[in-house]
Image 1 (cartoon, helix red, strand yellow):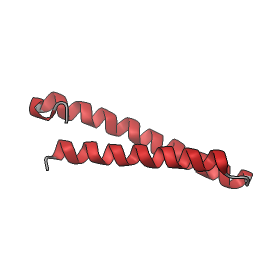
Image 2 (cartoon, one colour; image 1 turned 60 degrees about the vertical axis):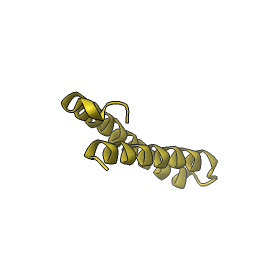
Image 3 (spheres, one colour; image 1 turned 30 degrees about the horizontal axis):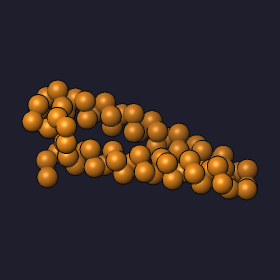
Image 4 (cartoon, helix red, strand yellow; image 1 turned 60 degrees about the horizontal axis):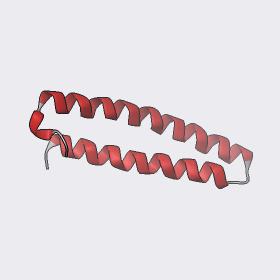
Amino acid sequence: MTVASDVKQCLSSLKGVEATLSTLALHTQDEESARLLHESMTMVSEIVSEMRKRVGELEREELQYKGF
């Protein structure tokens, strides 16, 4: 596996974590738990944004990684 494909796989996993945290935050009855889940989702969202930037950098640096 190439570095780019590893980074893209990590990004995909993080998106799944983000979606799961969002779902849990919406379905929990406890307000404190919902707040903590939402905060965690926000942190993961920021990481996803940074990872997307990194994927773009990898694709610009190494054209053969584009589209993986």
